[in-house]
Length: 207
Image 1 (tube, helix red, strand yellow):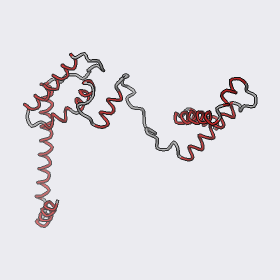
Image 2 (cartoon, one colour):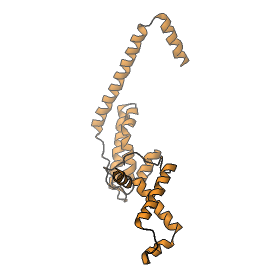
Image 3 (cartoon, one colour):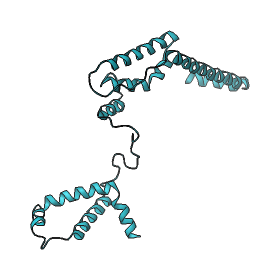
Image 4 (cartoon, one colour):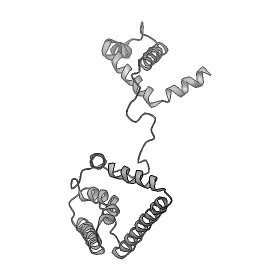
């Protein structure tokens, strides 16, 4: 059982990092040991002793809580399915801080595309929705034409007619849900006694 536990501990990336840090610290404290290892092994600690020193140092650090609450601890790695993006750090900063209008078009358009439906739903009319879609598509086309380096623009243009149909469907669904809520509230009020209705009105005025 001890051998199995030892193998599991050695596969823990946090332990690997800690071993490296302890190894570096041991080299700083005893710089002459590296030179001696290259020329003469007499009088030096064996590899087993060195490993024991590292394991003890790691165990002590874990008892002190040095590895507790590290960023990303216990969480799966993100974006493993995505292809390598040399500008990943720019994209992450834009997403993390909700920055707008910054970065290359490939990133800003991708961020805008993710929230475009919300902007469309907030539009007051079909004409406003159409204007938003046409402007979005135009900026995608212009970004594809401009060969200024950076990541390629992979954000697709939106089908205006299809998006308008989807916008109408979402709007009708919102209207339906709101109407059902009003009917339900009216039925609940109708079932109230006059005392309950008075308390309800007072509570509404207080809110």
